[in-house]
Image 1 (tube, rainbow, N blue to C red):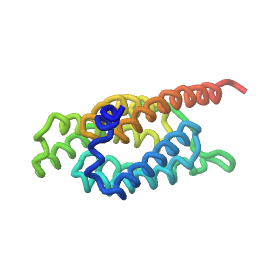
Image 2: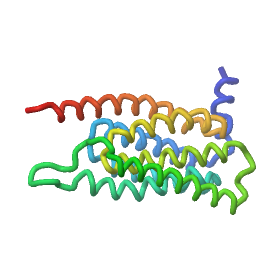
Image 3: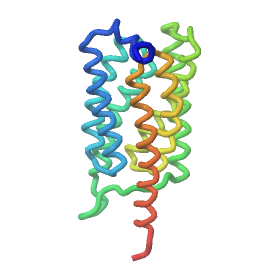
Image 4: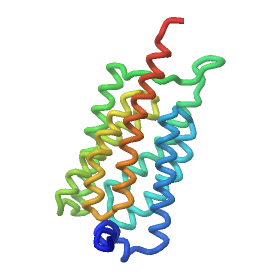
Length: 210
């Protein structure tokens, strides 16, 4: 049993206690944020801002620049999303769940490519392409950037990007030694699947004729 525990959490013996506590707090708020997103509740954004702010600090300290930039972007997009989700389209309704149109699909492709190029440039400047994980970081950054933008726009397709990115991130974080975060992303994958199904049900019901 001790060998299993050491295998999963042994890397934390060299971490500051404060960092471990902060990672756990961030994990709790991350789960809360995704759960509120699943429920189509605007609290997704304030809870998300708390966890991303913590992760920006930790990931910068640990030298994980790609992951840090993802979370910094999340924080900014949370402010934008908070505004979009509470923006009234008439006297009684706010921005509803919807599907992406042709233009938004094109913008998604631009965001993905821009994010990949940006992270590639940063990793090149700081000589971070010294491990295969850096290339995966570059890919997941593009995926998550699109997912966050679509979530801020309240588009159902955001869940597809979260699911794909989370599935890649689970083994990646475990390999990096971030066991708590790896477990977190496994939980997020499950919530994202149910989130997609719940949003789809909500969208289909809203499209039914009165």
